[in-house]
Length: 101
Image 1: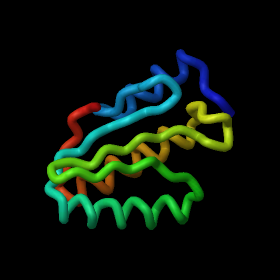
Image 2: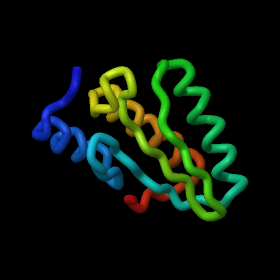
Image 3: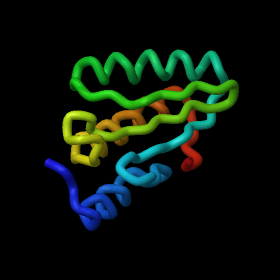
Image 4: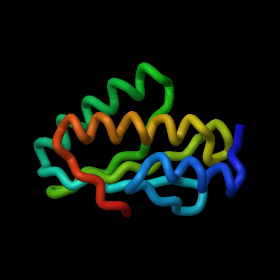
């Protein structure tokens, strides 16, 4: 179910560091390249299990995740915020620090 603007604002409060960019939420995590690769593999494994995925951009000093629900017309749903929270947990386990987008 597509979230309202008010619901999106409320959900964002639960995932500090994530920002809304239109119908997508994004966050960058500071982590060196090879650590970022390991973190991405961990995230991808969870994404496969839950059937929801982020767009991922790996750079030498950070990883950027962008999340929207493609099946909902590229709109934000509760599944996006669940994935963001899971990514936060994985990032913390890899020593990555969020710094917004």
